[in-house]
Amino acid sequence: MLEQFVAVMPGTLAPALLVMSLSAMLAVGEGRDKPIGAYWRLYGLLLGLIAAVAFAALRATAVINQRTFINYPVLWCAVVVDVLLIAITLASHWLVSGWRRRPVLLNAANLIAAVGIALTVFYALPDVILQLTIWVEPGDPIFTSDMLMRALGFVLGVVASVVVALIFRTMRGTAARLPFMIAVLAMIVILLIQHATGLLQILQGRMLMFPDWLFMWLVWSINNNTGLILTQTFVFAIPAVASIIAGFRTPVSAKAVAAAGLNEAETRRHKAFRRRAIATAAWSMVAMIGVTATLTVGVAATTQTITLSEPEAYSLKDGVATIPFSQVEDGHLHRFEYKAKDGTEMRFIIIKKNGGAYGIGLDACDNCGDAGYYEKDGKIICKKCEVAINLATIGFKGGCNPVPFPYKTGNGKITIQTADLDALSAHFQ
Image 1: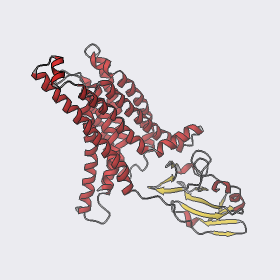
Image 2 (image 1 turned 90 degrees about the vertical axis):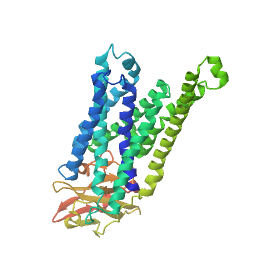
Image 3 (image 1 turned 135 degrees about the horizontal axis):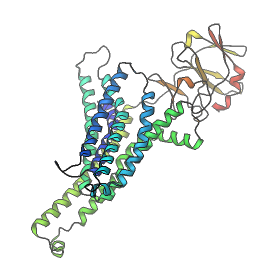
Image 4 (image 1 turned 135 degrees about the vertical axis):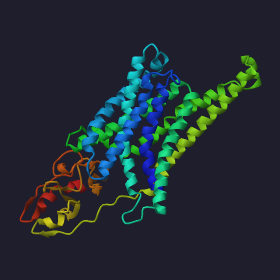
């Protein structure tokens, strides 16, 4: 159950916070007294959910085995829309306060908000939905106690994200608009960073050369994704503090009430507002603590440390390393070890790529050093920065690709001159 909860909750939190934030900033009117665009955000949420379910189903049935070609245009659009959402949030008070005079602008803002919600939901939820496919272990009966516990963890993860967003939403009525807007702006900026990180990962996998500063930022963003999710939550401490201040500034004592000239009904309203302001802030703090516990203690309890696979045996004779095709033709990552002339322990990897070619390189890269690579869900991933390496680019220089070196194929084997490995020993020192 815990594994499902910690996998689902972080994936659904950003969409829940975005829906809540845009609803709070763009809400106007009641009942029939609403612009037509007020419902478009809901339509965007439904469209994103339907598309995410359909895409997850296609991936689960192997109709689509890679999501990069879908995510690439989605992330480009998401980055652009995130920038527009920042502008809309900044102008939200102007848009809402005079919406009857400029309904077209408010409807345009709601349309952009709907697109942003749809893109965010579509990008975030397929991986969450695919958690449904591991409720039942292969060969096990459908209805077991383990399956029910996994289902409960999944449901609780979704519910927790929605509850956290709803708790934060209550502060819109107790905190001033400015502190709440600052929190929403910060949340959307972090969402922009997350979308930009995903886009840059795809571009890096396509051998686009980044400046050093941009690559280091990408690595930092990937390694600190959990911190970014936590920050998306903790920015709402700003309106929480503002709620507490507003509550205590509200006159409720006999002396303050007399000075303000309040009647009994107004005094009761003030007391109710103070209680509500303090309660919403307290519950918001509880929500932040819950998210923190999930992403730290919960993840630590369910995450195993990644260890590299053991090196395989191969023939080494007269300065030539020989690996038969039959040893590496299964399409999985194979790791080998070699001791250079200077005594350095080196590693190199071989994987058969689509089309029959072989990807061969050091188990190290120019950017992340000798951290090595591992295989997960059919992808080759750098252990240090978690970047997924495009199989087609293994054997070429650039980015986080394994450092290439010369080799020959023929007569059913791969041959490598150890002198070429000796020349690259510095990568493991």
